[in-house]
Length: 104
Image (cartoon, rainbow, N blue to C red; front, side, top):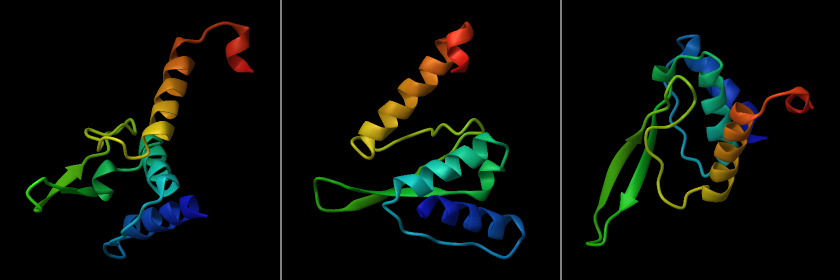
């Protein structure tokens, strides 16, 4: 149910209806945004911020940029790591596959 929300948010911003601020733990929402950018949506329409807790008790805000190919320029260690690694492995497998079996 979260992925369609990403489409709604992106469409709303594309229409010039303002900005939307979303706090989420939804991997599906973030993956859909990345997919839409890989499909051609303007990466400048989306900003992702990660709040990192430091050892001294303070926090810093780090921006995660989505590149035009849907990849990210930074990803926090351990966040969605299992699924993220699976997606990366799947993309590598698709790039490395050839022959008739690659179309199954």
